[in-house]
Length: 107
Image (cartoon, rainbow, N blue to C red; front, side):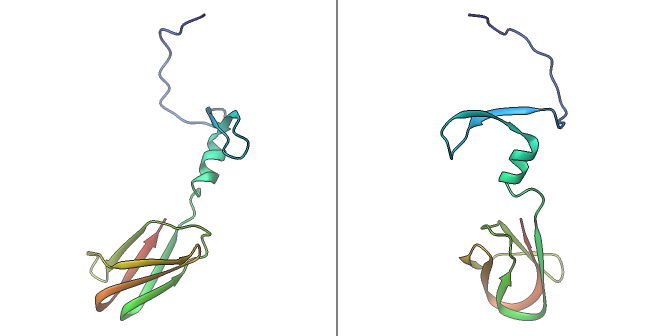
């Protein structure tokens, strides 16, 4: 059996690159392109929600068709932690201990 001892280090990703993995739908090993992986992880789809009026409860309809990570900042740019509920793959409710205005970044 041949053995690979060395290889050229490539630090860039381009359209011709492939990754090997198992297709969850078929259970078979296959090659994946960078586009396949980007599509799987959501590509560049993000959503920024602005809460202009101070509120303790924010309901966000994001329509991303997934359960994104959430970062919330107040109007001064400080990160705020609250309680989050994923109502479904397109809506989140955030509850905070006090009303404030700011932004929620979903990705």
